[in-house]
Image 1 (cartoon, one colour):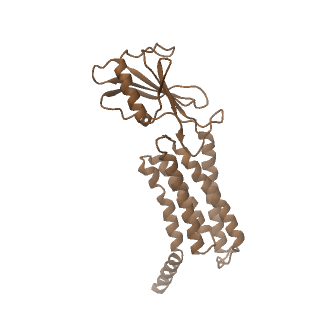
Image 2 (cartoon, rainbow, N blue to C red):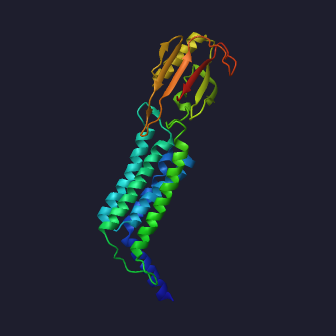
Image 3 (cartoon, rainbow, N blue to C red):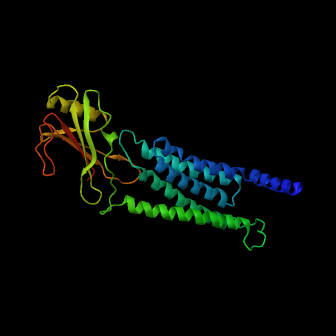
Length: 289
C-alpha cells in the first residue's frame, strides 16, 4: 500500500511539474478578477473572474503546442483583457464607460481563443497516451473539454450582453453616474440626486442633481460656482439661451452615446412632471439621448 501511494504521488508531482506553465497561465487568468474588484464592483468581478479564468484556462489546457508557444499565446490572452479594461475605465478626462464596454472585449478574446484552439488542433495531431478503457486520447479529452467550456461561457455571456446592452433603437446608452458631477466643492451642497428622474423608451434617461450653496449666496453666485466646478471636471459648458449647455463623449471601446448636460442660469419654471425647485437651488440635468 505505501508503495502504491508513493507511485500515485510521484505521478501527480510529475504531471504538475510537466504542466507548470499551464498552471501559471490559469492563475494569470484568474488574477484578472482584481481589476473590477479594485474598483469596488464585486458582482462584476464574479463575471470577470469566470470569463478570464475560462478563456485562459481553456487555451492553457486545450493547446497541444509546446511550452514556449503556449505561454506566449496565453500571455496575450491575459494582456488583451487587461488592456481593454484600462482603456475603457481610464479614458483621460472623458466619461468612463460602464463595465459592459470592456467585458464585451473580453468575450471577443474568448472567440479568438476558440479559433486559436481550432487552428492549434489542425497543426498538432493528438499523440498523448490513450485513456484506459476509452478510444479517445487524453489530449483529445482535454481539447474537447476546453472547447465545450469556452464555447458555453462565450455563448451564455454573449446572449446576456445582447439582451442587456442593446436597447430598442440599436444604440448603446447608460445612465449618468454621480461621479460625473461629484464631489462638489466645499462651497456647494448636494440636496438630492436621481440618476434616472425621467426618460422614455430605448434606454433614454435624464439624471437630476439638485445643488445649493452652503452660505447665503444668491442663485447667480451658485450658478457661477457650479459652472466653474463642472468645467474643471471636463464639461465644456457654454451659455445658450438662458442656460449653460455642453456634452461629453464617452471614453470607450464600443459606440456609446454622448452625455448632454444643461442647467438654467435663471430660475426655471415648473415642469409638467414636478413643481419648480426652490429659487436658490440649481438643478443639473444630464441625459443620454
